[in-house]
Image (cartoon, rainbow, N blue to C red; front, side):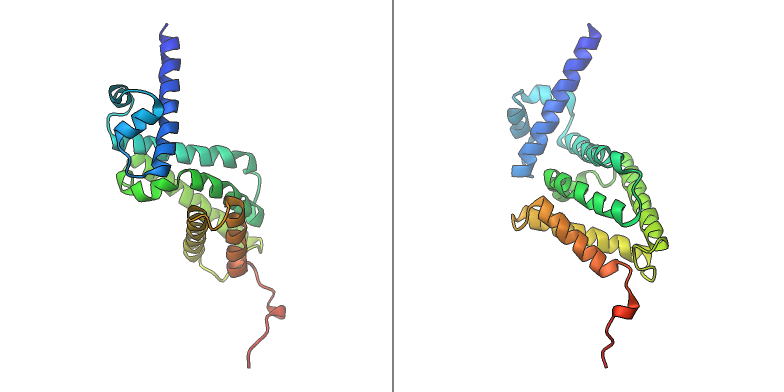
Length: 196
């Protein structure tokens, strides 16, 4: 009996999380009443699952990280440019799905688990860029902190294009890859023209 109840609880939380994503995408300032209505449940039921709006936003943030990890798992074997391009392809549509979190980040930025995951992701990206420099896919004269900042800024530009409906997630991913690798890719200095 308790196993059946556990399954129902999990299904309810899934429905709430999906309703939260859809509602907050339309209106990032939506309250718990609007999210409960979108989930087809009462406010009391919503509060039994998530004690506050902050707790729900934390759950949505962790869901976002979980979806990113699950989407990237099949590509763990990729290295260098191929890995960076696949990360961009995966992140653009997921970021579009969770773009409302940018404006709600203050609710989770101090959360220990969120900070741990973010730190791990940043470390993995630094290692990926270091390896890409080592194998010649990225200009090794560029410092890794610059590469990570430039990568994040280029991704943000892509997300903004998608949010404003100026590009599809696929087109934005293409623009991000072109911008990143044209700016940071290994250059053949013999082909660079020298101004006189």
